[in-house]
Each structure stands twice: as C-alpha cells, then as structure tokens.
Length: 63
Image 1 (tube, rainbow, N blue to C red):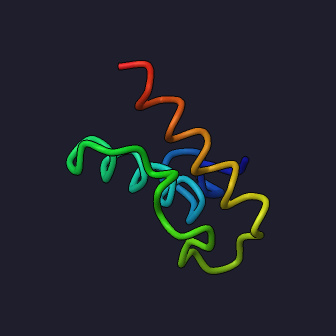
Image 2: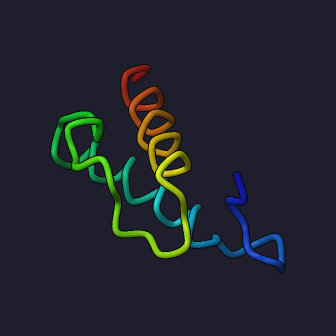
C-alpha cells in the first residue's frame, strides 16, 4: 500500500484514509468495518478500500 507521498514523509491519500479510519475507530469506539464498503477516497480501488478497513480494524482490535 502506498502510505507515503513522493517525498517519503507526507501521507498519500491512501495513508490519510488509513489514519482517518484508525482515528474514527478510536474516537467512535467501534471498528471501521461497520462503515459502508466504498470509502470516499478518490483514486483507490474497492479492493484497496477493503484492505484499509481490515488493517484499521486489526489495529484497533489489538488495543
């Protein structure tokens, strides 16, 4: 997953979406897998969106 932009420091749109999912889960107290299956992240695929939701859910389940 391309989580960082070309400078290797700032997040890519994918990295921003993953961070937002984890923050959402932490604030809302629920796993992001309850969100709609299609995330409003431009330029990503349905498969990548599903992988981001799964990664965020796994990160939150381990805390």
